[in-house]
Length: 302
Ligand SMILES: Cc1cc2nc3c(=O)[nH]c(=O)nc-3n(C[C@H](O)[C@H](O)[C@H](O)COP(=O)(O)OP(=O)(O)OC[C@H]3O[C@@H](n4cnc5c(N)ncnc54)[C@H](O)[C@@H]3O)c2cc1C
Image (tube, rainbow, N blue to C red; front, side, top):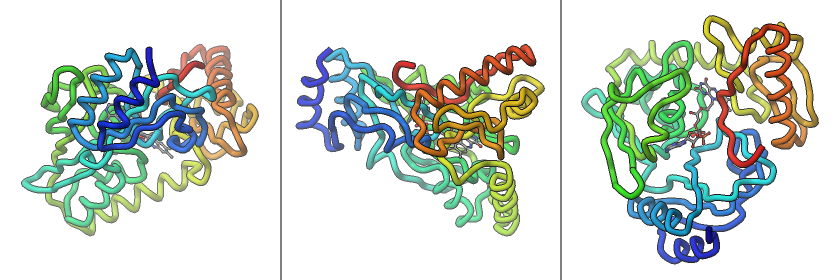
């Protein structure tokens, strides 16, 4: 693996920025995480193509990151390249019952835009941080709805091959998972939307936002729900019933507002958060015989 050669080859050729040792704590909502060996912003499809070719040739592993709102990065960082979608992946257009947007566009911005244009179908997304790409990768959503339900198609960039259009119905949508991640890099999504009554859309958005504010610790760094809900139960309920609400490890704490959130309430490290996750898994296994499965994604070595 030659990180230095990869950096040198990309730095002179990409329109997006490339640098070494980018602190991932700047790019995750937990505000933790050590350096990414390489930080590569792809502004165009040509950038993506070149970056993935060079990284493959130089034997450097890579991962795509959106806004890091579902990501725990190790304190020692990541010894590969973090690819971020830049300029050309931040666009949107609402027309003929569809919302077409670049994967680097912020989901909350798209939700606002649909509201301004009197378009319904996106109110479930109010308050979910991150990019459209991250939402598609994770099949983001709430009890009110999730993105996979309204996907018309997704365009992927497949390294070594190029662009590929996948119909929404041909995508494996799971609970906070999609089959997209192993197929390629998500570059664009087309979502089905409908005409709606602006007053009703506004009321739904306000209701969803109010519910979020009342039930989530939004003032502290977190990555949202840590675990997916086990079939027929809720991870938060199990954690609370196991007596873990408020449990701490270093600067990480199980939120007293929502037990399925771990918050960084005072200089937590990634090791604190990962350790607390393991503690919760062990305790809930011992008390309830249930295996809690993380919803958040891990980057680096834990
Ligand atoms: C306060 C708070 C509340 C939250 N509430 C919710 C909620 O209600 N519902 C919910 O579903 N989630 C929720 N989340 C989690 C998170 O916001 C979502 O999972 C979000 O969709 C992640 O988007 P992101 O851009 O930050 O992705 P990241 O965290 O950067 O990445 C997440 C995963 O997606 C992959 N990925 C990102 N972009 C691409 C791409 N372009 N191509 C391929 N793979 C990609 C990454 O490799 C990684 O595996 C919450 C988080 C926070 C902090």
